[in-house]
Length: 399
Image 1 (cartoon, rainbow, N blue to C red):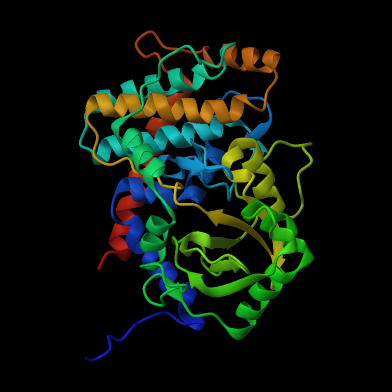
Image 2 (tube, helix red, strand yellow):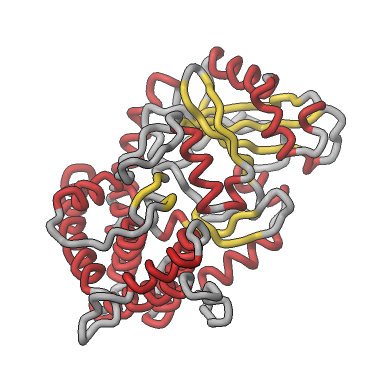
């Protein structure tokens, strides 16, 4: 039987291939364009003349769209819905997360062919869900209904095992990363640097998070590859690494680790706030404040003289996909996601700060809209800006 040929991208072509893939992905829909155009959001923010509330200085996501929220497991297997991508995290104005999430949801409504009035209702529900997190009991006694998409993905997360992760990410239980569409071959120096990293003293804490006896056990790099796991890693290091500790014989005793280069954030930070100078340390610190389940499984390191962060991938870690929505589903999703982001911000504030911030959030409501005017005006402006840019993007990059 003739062996099937495998096509993959070699090192010199990585950036070119990723750029083409990102451009095509962003052309699929306005929502996809919004997800891939963080810079355009902050360009709008820099030049807008709209007066936005100045929230207390807390760690913010910096790229808070609906696709960056989903189920995350902690080291013990407990699952919670948290912010799951912290590349842009910074100590800044929490309003920026709220507006970016609102824009993402508004674009989801447009892609679902929902009328404009539904967008207005979504913003009302978003601010209500966010504000719930700042009540004295954290909104704990208030029912916030999980949207269907969240209930479905949570059920999937609870049931998933290593076999599901291996099949999804690697195509099976073989201790290898199959070269092809997603995994590309490494240079010799890249493979050697990865092996050295996991053999170093620097990785002891990370190995302990993987395995109780990890720091004192030898770990073997079974395989490693460049990972096309998205299109935001243009020119950056991005690797998948398959590990196994000596003495572990079970099929599910392998560990899949994501290594990603950390770069300077484009999200604006508050002046006078001391932050880690190393970008990977900044990402890990932000994750520990915003998404504790994820943050406890991450580590900052140096690889090939670049700043990188490592995270173990668990079967329960899933992306929340907000697809086609009905009017009620749109409202439920907005309230639920608003609460998730609100709780991530609120846990960083003391009681007095939470109450003060809640009072500020309740200001400036219009007579006809429960959402504050600054949120509505910002989203309307951003929709126009991104719609125009999206159409121009499609004209340039769609064959």
